[in-house]
Amino acid sequence: MIKRTLAGILLAGSLGFNSCQNYEKSKTIQETQNSSEDTLLKTAGNFYYKGNYALAKENYSEFLEIKKNLKDRLGIADGFNNLGNVSLEQGNYNKAVEYYTNALKIYDKLSDSVSISQTYNNLGLVFAEQRKFEKALEYFDKSLDIQKKLNDSLEISKVLNNIGIIFDKQNKNELALIHYFNSLKIANKINNKDQEALCYNNIAVIYNKEGDLDKAFEYYQKSLQLNKELDNKRDLTLNLMNIGDIYRKKNNSFQALKNLESSLNIAKEINNPDLLKDIYLTFSETYKAKGDFASALKYHEKFSQLKDTLLNEKSLKQVAELETIYETEKKENENKKIIA
Image (cartoon, rainbow, N blue to C red; front, side, top):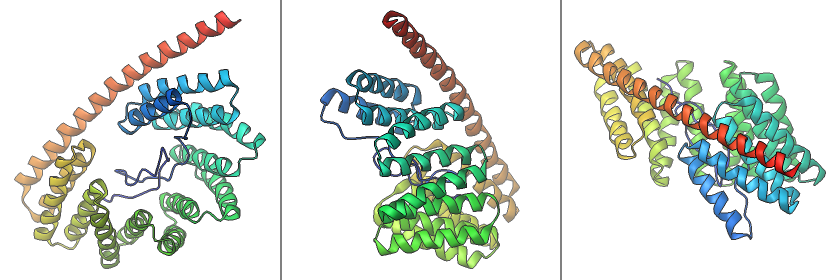
């Protein structure tokens, strides 16, 4: 099971690895001098990172209302952008586009090039999730053009990574590699180890897809070493799982299982069920290749059980989120009637 690294939305930094690919998202939490507004943003950010998007939305909505009352145009735009990020995570893509577009209109009036670029990037993410790849590339290119004018090396590297991911998903491996290597070159130049580790992993993914296992192994190892230095346990877990998968394909079941065991231990330590699920499946595939069908079945059962548990939890969370959204919108409508 190949795991990719994409660049993600920024709440106060990038989101690193995901179980599939992490896009680089942009612009969420903004500094504020008002303590109550600052508290709302920090609370919303905490909920966002924990995956409690309903409560994140509730706090971001409250922040937005405060900014509307203050007629703070930049704050209003940031509020829309934050709500767009939440909607994107919830899979409510039409709503995400609406929020991002509202933010973009204000940033444009304020001539805020940095925020315009970041919002273009976020719109690209929405279309990427919808598999509207040409539309995603259009917005990533707009973001990249502005970042080049701003000469923001890190952001350029992130957007190049995102463009590479689109080509990766389209199985345009050569174009994907070109963008990943260009992203890596910039990350090396500015000595950003997080971005370097991300690029190394994505480059390895392409070589893995193409069956060049030696090169894939080389770049996975580079990503692994950096994530050890950074003590980035989540990303380290994915590196070890990917390396285990390479050893499986090389018919070295001993090293495959050794790396998977290390990956499993860290996943348990950080209590990440999504990673555990994928590791169990990779264990099953490895034991199957080894001819140990009893162990393969045991780990596939663990994979299936955890997958079902996560699906049930997700369904329950979605119901809770819908209830919260309903109550929030109901309250907003009541407030509108009072104002009218």
